[in-house]
Length: 393
Picture 1 (spheres, rainbow, N blue to C red):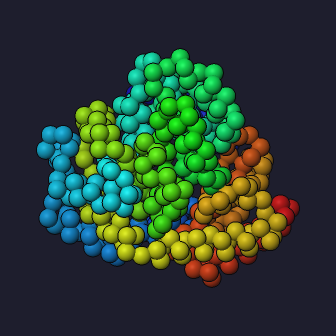
Picture 2 (spheres, rainbow, N blue to C red):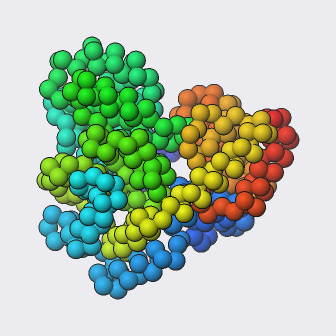
């Protein structure tokens, strides 16, 4: 093998020279609010497990029961013989939860974007995308034969400018945005986007990965948060973040769901979600339909943590959600800050260019319903200690 891969060895050496080479951290045990990471006990401020569901006893029990009845794998793609009655039940309960006509479940949130965008657009169409949209949207857009345009982040004047210039030259037009932007925690201007879409006869598409289980009534998402039911053509949710398992779904019209069933490539060419995952997700959605206690706790924790960090003088950007970036700026300083926090018992990953623009390095704190006030107090004290040592505050 060696000689053929020497070009890859060179690329890895470049990563090391640039100081961005990394090894994967190793988690021993479940992804909880406090964890053992690389042999050290730390407060976990880096997971997407917003509601503490990924190790919830009720979800584990539902997963085990599903395995007992259906086995460990679906055994085929859904269009052949991998479509079990629990897959159907999951789509039914998700549509009810989302207050939408129909839902198509995919194997991951990434797969939703990879499979849906190219299925609903074609040559002669235009896709207009927010410049800060998630990597999976960018990849999904690349798979489409439609033309592409970008609008400045959440800039409605710029979006309208693009629409004025280009809309008339195309058959269909699809406007795509994240619901909650994963690096800054700000929320898309969905009402204005929907208004412009109606004015210029466009379809709308929202990737609500970080809004699912977080925004709206009991986590019904950004569409629910703005009361825009039936006004957004395609609403993408993830089942791996707040819901705590794996998978993604597209909430849409009945005809949208039927079309994806025929043309969504991950549905056609990749085995259906395993029964354990489906059983656990159904349980999670039922719990959210019964109570708002999980989302209430998430938001009160987020508010508590943000206020305390703000009082210390940290820059938490424009976040409107539990995603709390602490913006440091310099790349090397950001990574050093993250390293020192970990040494002091708080794990929060540093995020730098190319994930965020140069000079806007940050540690991204993910507050969850699973954190106690005592843990958050300890985390804030650690931020204060390290921040002062490094002269950040």
